[in-house]
Image (cartoon, rainbow, N blue to C red; front, side):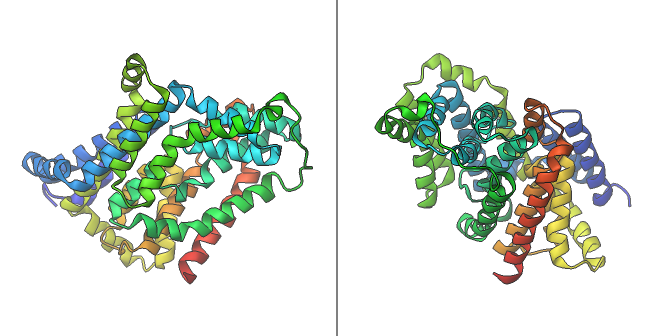
Length: 402
């Protein structure tokens, strides 16, 4: 055993990570602490310095860190500049069907990946859900489900960007494979949450406003996201794409220096940026220490079917950690020597981690939404769990047949 016992050090470090998460320490700080502890225990000071240096100078790390910084910057600027209010107001005025509106509002807000930001869409969902006569549990379900359903194919999702960086997989290939699962999630969301609800039309003052004005407001407020997504789809470096989106937002809103300074002082900006760096650092430390190879051998010796490994491990981690990024960082570290990170394998890992996280009792969006609608998470599970089962089934069928 001696000084170099990577598996033991991995377990100790991950235990520290889990404890920190459950004590509400930020994900970035928790991942960084786990990575440094594992590195110091298994590689020593000089080895840690080497891995740290290599991670800092790696092109993938730089791209991911800057992309994450600009993604969260755009998200917070949308709120601070009031652009998100224009976006939602225009959307509500442009669409006359409350069923469509109640599902689109959380989906649109979901494009702004701020932790716990389901609270931003909850009041909007409530206003439309009241017209449809939905109960508290369905309001919770709709706000959570439609907010998260689109993200597996959203090229500016930090989780998707991180997955590409960790596994070296093409984003286009992941989006193509996950499109079917997203389609199933949207259909499931409609059948579970809205199918039996009678259709009515909006009759409030917002829908009577000028349609042209609403369309203009919608295009204006969506422009930063449109610019970012188009550039990403055209295969422009994701850091450059998100930078262009941030510049567009600053330009069209004529953001004041004081507002920008306030955003830069927001802890979330630096927390999300640190998460991007620490996830790659943890992966590199796990590989350099030999822990990944030992874990891979242990998993291989269990003789479990690869489909079970690719789905059960990340799903369990997603549920236990309440963090898709944490689940993906650990899954990649654990499975790096066991599976080949081809698109079909990575996609199943991604979807499994994501769906596990979606119903985690520590998932902030779920916690905040349930609190807002004054219901319990467990009551919402009667809608969420069947939806999760159908969605993971779609992912497994896609994996086996495509």
